[in-house]
Image (cartoon, rainbow over all chains, first blue to last red; front, side, top):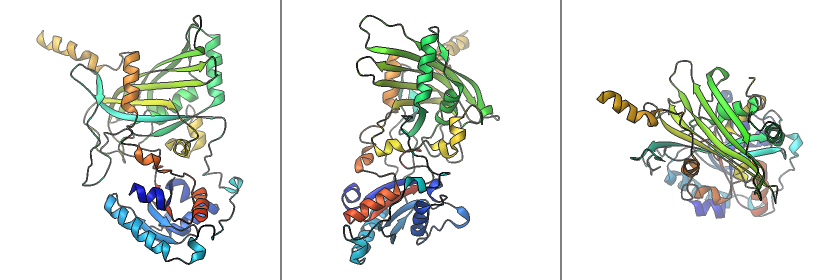
Length: 328
Length: 77
């Protein structure tokens, strides 16, 4: 299947929440394709699934099943239908796609990655303790041929968006206060509310303001030594307690990491991890292990040249609420 | 007494207040990072902009495969 996708299709992934709503040429084009299939999104409902279509907008196939064989069948059938299209719809260069000015996109649903955004890759994973008490991977993802659903034992992926100015502000504050400073509240709350979540089995619930029972995140400038590799070297430490009012879902733990600037190149090194005990599940994350169990989240700087690293954070659907996580 | 000793032995596992040590930091980061075998499908050359995909498909004379989910397939779970 990977060979067919790589060689015979142009492949694209998208978040239906945006595309089924946006009132612009892109949203209209998507809906014009989707509405040729069984998922018409009546009443604003979901149009999620796997679609094959031509650049001209002719639907060739649709599937919303996880079974690889059924997806493969749909791809093959779609290729046959594509070959049967008139030359003006399928020959290289024959169909002219209208130019789409980025400024013409519906700004309520556009989340472009701007130059001043720092992207961090966020990976979560359920863990267990080995005989020595060390953290270890919890089982293997496995094939799960019955439903092809997430088993929850693999690593999850999301993205944290920070602003350059926020990191500059943090470094400047820490330089002035060698005893250490609190990470600005909006940043700390963004990390805690939207990224210290168990998204290993699906779209997770985020934490609301009241569910942040405790959150300490501090940055301390490390003393410079002779010939130091870093012009600035911040150590990050923290602790958190997140819990719903009814106590059915929660996550408590510690945070540790660093934010450094390499003296010679000015390059940034930025990583941190959170680890602790997680319990409970959300509407779309059923199947959590019973009780309180180890769960970790790792944050590392992303390579923003790669398309998948430019995917917006899951929680940024309300952009203001995401960036002002301490206020809304 | 036996019960108290047993509970004390469990304490380091039950508490979340233990600091993350440097070795543990590296281990946790590694554990959370998807393995190459589990993330090979990311190397297929995904676009994340439907319009760009459409332009490329027209230019190359290929159909488009769109994976559309509530929550981005490349960055939600």
